[in-house]
Length: 318
Image (cartoon, rainbow, N blue to C red; front, side, top):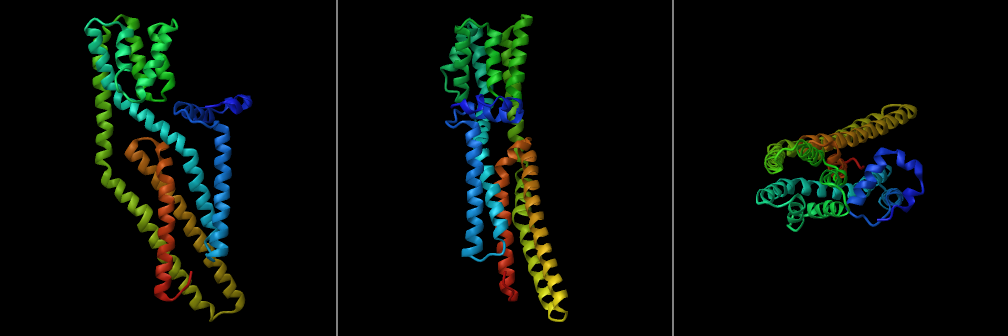
């Protein structure tokens, strides 16, 4: 991955979030420069938003055309910018999942009389997914003359995982204190396995809650608001014939404000639901980047469908 554009703009190095994003792209060997990818994502999302606005407004004649344009923009830019992040997180999850088995294998190798480097080579030659590549990087550092502790810190620097960093810190401190590394690795492997098991158990226990929140935030609440929007239109249309033209215009303006407020609430409610699901299921607010575009699309489509169906039932067009 080329970092030429980023290196030519030193002020970007002071932006921590951007640097983290660059590291994520580097970790998955993303072929496009991070800054170029962000610009391209923004342009593509803008074009898609304007295009959907024009199609919905001119070709289909939908009054919600501006909202659909904004929805397409938000969803597409979230998906495009979030895709490398999601891939990087999947890589980190795979490393954390394989870490306990790798540590146990290192412990067995050390007990059988192997050296630190030989134990690392045994792990690198085994099928441990993305962890295999990181172990080869540690071995390369050893071959370049780095000591065991500094070489292991390369793994902690390359993997943005609290579990991995904590594990490497414990191993380095144990080696510095002269403790038996084989026993330490065995205990750490058990702790890592237990931590991973608890995360899986939490995800299993929250399935029903996640389904309820997904249904409520993506279907039920938007559909109810779609019915409310239709009822508001029926009541206002029924009353305008009995008032002056000025009052009728004010009533229609009020209807527009009501519908915009409902749609804004649906947008915020879908985002909030996605954040709550990510915290409940994964314990990480950053995982909401996966759920937000899905919930936004489902919630807004549910609102539109409910409005169209209820409007057809009572004879009020959208």
